[in-house]
Image: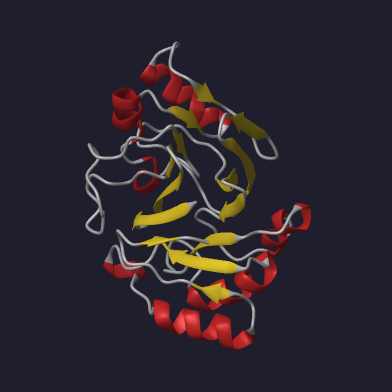
Length: 227
């Protein structure tokens, strides 16, 4: 099972012939590792509706036929865009979407969410089960104590954590989040894409590892990691 960082908060998770794409903001992303015409996902998962996460979901889903998973309100909008025959799953917080390759469970994130077309919804984190690993994309979030809860149900192998500040928690709050989440490994994201979210990922890595909370794997866009 491989985790490939595509830039900003976008990731491609692969296990054998299965590809799962998360938050496919590629077009207009100055750090994007691939173009929107390249991924061939079996599923596309969204944390929330902001344009820098919603991204190219419609175009990629139409091109590939990928199943889309998003919180209820965003899923409803996407069903209208993709057509009633396109597979769109609409769990709410606490709900789990079961798929042929594994599952994704929606958990709280503390943020806001409005799609480019104006659909307001609640943001989420995603607990993804794929290839025998449990990956927690915490989504865009501030630091809050409930980040500790997903790991109570089952050990988190890898957490994908925003560190850029301004729109999400910064790298200092993310160190506290690392302790709460309790993952074996953390991959930082949502930083360096635009000037307001510039930060020092290596300093974050040093702080987390010195505290003994987790191993931090800093990936450049396009790089992959095998947990």
